[in-house]
Image (cartoon, rainbow, N blue to C red; front, side, top):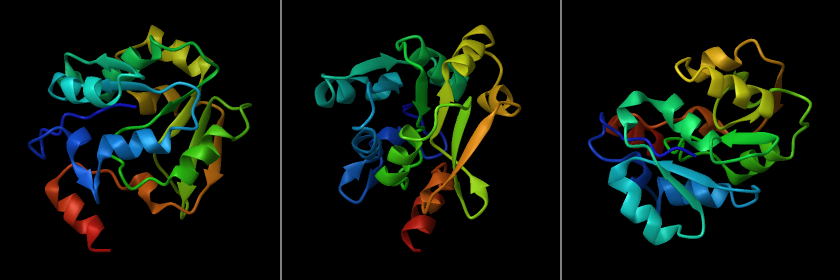
Length: 177
C-alpha cells in the first residue's frame, strides 16, 4: 500500500480524512485480511505511521516525487509471497469487500483487477512473475508492466475502485454524490 505525497492537494494523501478515518487508516482496515501489510510512505508521514502501525512493516520512500512505481518497487523488495495487492492510498472509497474479493480470487492469473460498470480500477493484485518483471524493469510504469499479462477481471459493486483523489475538488465531488 502506498501513501501518496499529494502535491496537487498540498498535503500527504495518507493523512486526508474520509469521515473519521485517515485514508491510510481506511486502507489498512480494508487490508486486515491480507497475510502481510507493508506500508510505503513518504517522509512526511513516517512518524505518524511508526506511531500508529508499529506492528506492521513500514518502508519510507525518500523520493516520493519519483512516482508510484518507486513505492511499488520498495514494497515488493520487502515481501516474498505468491501474490501482492497494490493498493494506492488515494482510493479511499474502495470497499473492504472488494479487497476481500481480490485476495480470495483465483491465483491462476498474473493480474487480478476489480471491475465496476465495465471499467477496471484499483487496488489490483499481481503475481510473483509480475513482481519479478517490475523488479527487473523498475523504470517501466505499472500499467505497461501489466497490460499484456494474463488478467482476471473480477466484477464488484464498488464505484470506489476508480475514484482516486488527486485534487481537493475530487474530495468534494465524491462526498456530494
